[in-house]
Image (cartoon, rainbow over all chains, first blue to last red; front, side, top):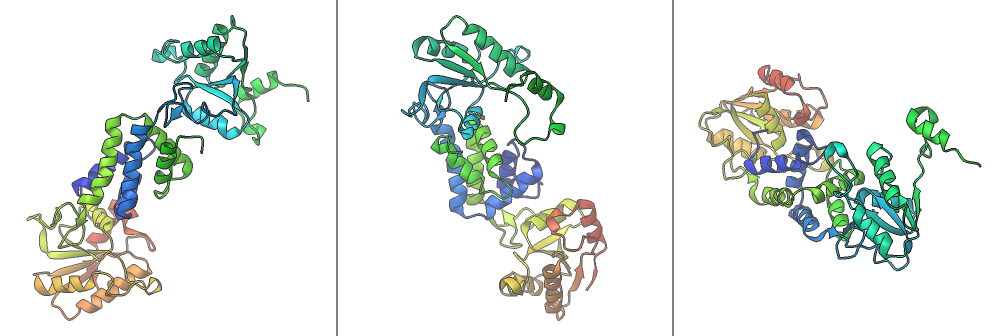
Length: 199
Length: 199
């Protein structure tokens, strides 16, 4: 690897810092960038710098935004009485892709995790409660992950919201659509069986 | 995907132009860059720009270099009577990694390929002959690929060099037939270099 000029080695080093990119792939990508038109390379570099400079937290939902309010929070057609609580901006994008939700979001920026020293004050639970107190929220949909941390965060938030006149719901868990039953893990199947409903 | 702010969509678009990077991976990498420290993102962007600005062809071997002469051509300990002919800079790096060659290189920047309209004047065969005429080259090692184009390029060069008082050898086909030199493991390449034979 040391047989490349310093600037190529430098590029390989920085590319291989990206998650899931090994040294071989980094070498391949670096040589591709070297061969590609100068304009393409500059646009790539520019877009990396811009994403750090432009993207900030939406002041309302804490999602990713290029401006003070994100596209969803500033959309007048969204149902402001519905708030979906997710862990990360990428989760919000996943829910949006499903097309099944037309309300607003609230991004916690994490989950409760005593093992990692993350408590209720480290994620945006206080901000969620303020929202419930201030606005006309009728339903809070808890869409945190279905692992231990996600579940306990959902339970914790549900308890905190008990004293407010707001409906608190949790997204259903069960067998993924299109999935083959024999490949589904036992815990999921157990959950799906326990929460079975009338057809 | 359209649920991201414009600057993130822009970054995803440019990352997914890289070879072997699909839209999902591009999304994952873009979000990683967004989360990573500003310094890291700037260093990555900077290294992309620098590789295009700094890297040029070595004026002697036509390999990748940050300066007029590459590290190998300017190394006084290399054997100047030996010249290894390869197709691409990455092939030179592969041979270097094998550690079996201590001479200089000559990068053709391609292979003869009548199908693609690439003839003898489109790759650096003339420059190789000039080198043989001008310098004290005693042996030319042909290390082009072992596919049809690589083999015929080797044969063509051997024929062109027949009239000069220079030994022309070909790396042994320990290299898998149809293989691309830069993907061959180092031990195989070393073996092939050691058992090179007269053409």
